[in-house]
Length: 237
Ligand SMILES: C[S@@+](CC[C@H](N)C(=O)[O-])C[C@H]1O[C@@H](n2cnc3c(N)ncnc32)[C@H](O)[C@@H]1O
Image (cartoon, rainbow, N blue to C red; front, side):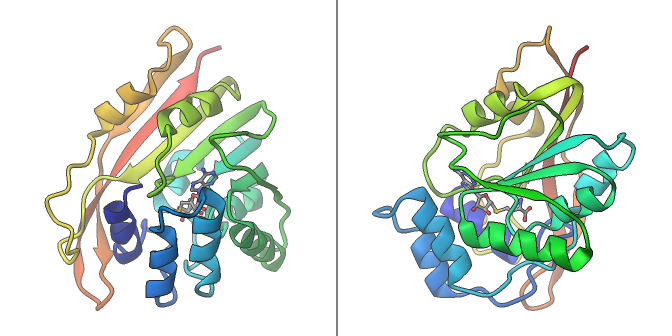
């Protein structure tokens, strides 16, 4: 995500689920935006600079999309503090949670233990490596970073880990909330996001490409609307 998108992520009070629970710090933002550092240092610094950030609840769109699916093997890309991973594990999925930040993975393990479920955590810089598949579900929620990377290529490789019939669920921010000072930012549409993945249509079918609007709460209790950009594709077979 760009720095601006990141701010929006922090101040958008989330994602309809993993709302920010504690205050953010300038130190966390500064380290995340420090171009002199590598991707692991930046994201690790972001998590270390503050305590647990999110509420631990799953993203509402994950619940909506994954609830009707039969549990199998799931891969949570950029799992953060593990709210989605823990929800999936509690639903019976065998979950592999990946993040570049060791502290995020440690918080995911703690959240799983507190919920009495198991998740497998693996540290990867997704630009360099991915866990071994196959998976029935690959989720990427707000996998947005201020570090320059070819995210579409990462997501394409991740889609390649899907078993036949498996789903890739990609959800990004699709707007800045009204209280953000970063208005005017252009967000890709859901169709642009889908097309940017350049997945071969003979192998993957789009099952959902849309941008639902939901209510979100700002840092000072402001209530407003934010848009999420949603792409769900299914591997044929
Ligand atoms: C904005 S957070 C979203 C976390 C979580 N999915 C959620 O919905 O709350 C993005 C996450 O992606 C991770 N991340 C960013 N770049 C990464 C990379 N190259 N490889 C692995 N994880 C990465 C970050 O450490 C961070 O936890």
